[in-house]
Length: 452
Image 1: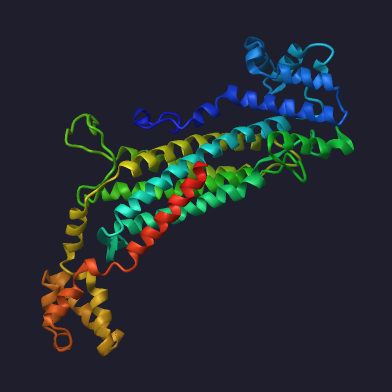
Image 2: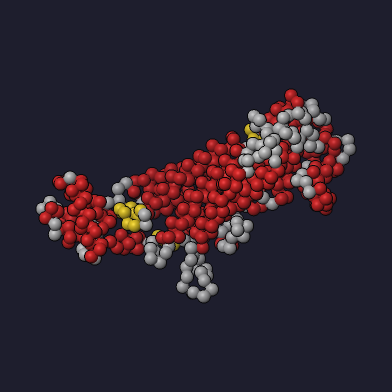
């Protein structure tokens, strides 16, 4: 699903698909082979001239692709044909030092983390753009009253900016999670066949650390091929980002419904919503987000399943984790690209918001009336009075205000002018505007930080 989202032409490709092209992964693996050779030469394990020769030739464009493809077809092995071809073009006397003391997963996992780090850089840039758009939207809607809704029903008044403040708050924590994760995630692995350092002995940890230093990574304390928690954690964190994005997409989708009409995602001129119903202005970008976010969340249990590695290594779980990571990252890039597009161009309809506030003819202000009356007769008594009037107003389609003022317990304490004020929903939005502006400032500061 995430490979061919239908509205791709409307939204710029963030570049994640290109990262997960096989050729880009191969080059990342070759970069790890270079780091391995450089480190081993520095430690006197292989000749310095061999490391120079390997570094000079470890470029995919220098290799014979037909030989590599034939090797993969013949061996069915993940990396051996690539190693063979690198050894061939390095030539004698240095080609025999390629891949010294390493096993396949040492190279592929570390190389794939190079790719993932590039993806993380794109995600953080996209999140910065999302936060910047949210900041503008929170400020624009800070004082824009609408019905606050709980359990699908009117609750108390809120503002649109308050909704956005909630989104910002979650995304700010997602930034922290992605950054906190990095030292655990981006680590080199070079423990050999079973992660025991047997092939390199006492120099093994130094080789692994040296590779990490060259690549800008940390190093694994125990380089076991059975360890997958850091890879699974990454997918779990991206699952959280996707869940927030999906929630936002669903909220905007709902508020776009004809019966709500409070917002509208960008619908450029010429956009066709239906082949048969010309009037349709469908929430296509929101639907893309909702669908792709579900795909990312579905990868979380798959990543946790991939931690169930048997003994010291198991290609089965490596295949699961690799697939989960690639699909998660591609979908995540699509989600954030579309979310930014929506938030930058979201149309707000304050008149419709206000009209929806008035649908209950004052019922949304029942809490305010109860609290004011409770000062005189106590909260529970006031609740009973207002409850009776509210239920009668709803069931019998009568005026809430008239029912309240017909009750002597109310009219003796609240005059009609005061009741009109109590039933004004624009005066009962609490600290919505303040929270919207506070979160907007935080979002803008974080966006600035992520852009530098």
